[in-house]
Image (cartoon, rainbow, N blue to C red):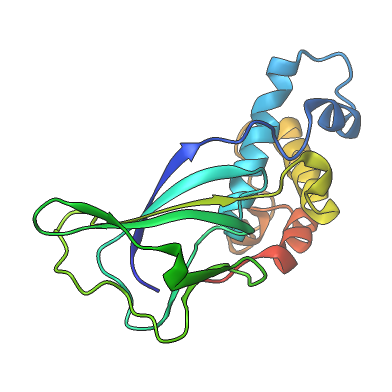
Length: 197
């Protein structure tokens, strides 16, 4: 895959797991929400990184240095919902929008892809050196209920682990440390949802 750089444009408006759900699961009844939120957020962020997914719908911008030799550009975060645009800037500093009639967007694939249509080519203009290609896309599930149950359960379990062990803990021998970094049940739940780019 082509090297890319990513910039969050619009953050999610909700977390994949609510604080009340976490409160019930961790038996932390009566704790202020501001004390529970960091555990849910930390667990969510960690599992998103591990899985190459973004759980709650959000907007990202991806920058590339050049168009690929193949007819496909892979979007690094799943699930892909849509692609707003593909733009590129030439050496004169003029930004162009690559017409959407030239490509299709596959949201059925994991990871999602931008695919050239039949007998279409990527632009051939000479591109500027700095972040010449800009792609804006939407990824993530539209609401909490649509986030798959195994993912939400993994968040519950990892957030509870963080809540119960608020400092770094090493259990067992040094050889076991790597295996202990992500609690086994949460690791098993998220494993089938990992996206390999």
